[in-house]
Image (cartoon, rainbow, N blue to C red; front, side, top):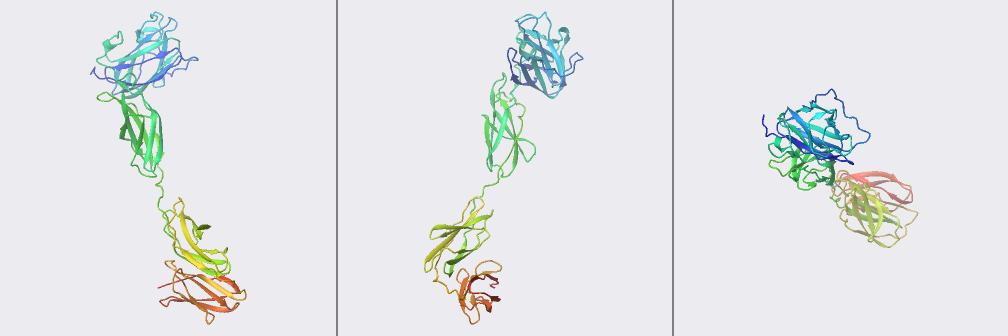
Length: 447
């Protein structure tokens, strides 16, 4: 058995009132499973009505063996001479309790239930085990626990006579770990600083990360109790734990902190919609201008168009619309328009080209006016140069925005409205309109 092997202890102090515990645990050999003391008691400790302090440690042991357990105590009176020791939350033992113990003197105790022949031994398996001291009487002070593989050694003084070097003390487990997404590709971590429980000092912290519920791996380290993890993936769930390590060589590493989980947001949309094109403005009668354009596209989705007239906002237009009737104009007046597309994240397109027109004079209410837009059935783009005719009643040609206006048509007559593209594609629409202004939009093949 190698006496140079040490068991590592993590201590988490929770001191209250007069009961003081300050523990350095020294191990000379390998390991420890369930503490087996010569007693029939195997229940968890009952919490006393008045508690005079608690102290919990985690013992990290490499393999299984049996130890003598020694506690260095100082008692204030022969009637205040015991504490409780609880192992792994389920095995409770009353340490000391003998009235022959000297008062106000540091004394090594290795027995329980006030019987000096009931010595305490411990068999611990490899892994982590909790040791909790619970104060039941005021004024009792603990400053050291030894777990000795050499059962014949009786510690004196601070117990160094039974050790072969400095005790190995693990840093305390980092607590209070919090995470927050700082961007779609970075996460910020903060936690409470660890202490080294009498060891050589905290050197830093290992950062461990799990992606999507996978295994934890060390991804970085920090010499302060915060860290920013970068170069992550958007819209991805990450979990983190943190381990403290000291300045020993090799380093002693704490138990991993409780995990924290965070999901990075999606990549923010910074792509604006495409520019609305082919904006056309067509006067269709007193007090009305017909506007038409080719729709914008966007990687996320449009939320609205904003139509401007003479440099000022005129109207919000549905993102699915490609036309608008401005009914708030005056006759014989020049108006200029442009339109802007907005997406769902607030990005806006560049302005469309400007379309200008002059409103017509007062229309003849006794005749029919027909206007509209001719678009390609496949590309949805406007078709310029389409000849629009109504028999002998009149004809016109679509402008660059595919718009047309037929005026002075006899009302309440059936006419074939004929549409002929520059490459002789034709479409016939039989219609009958009453006097007034009517809209007839046409979709046809341009090839």
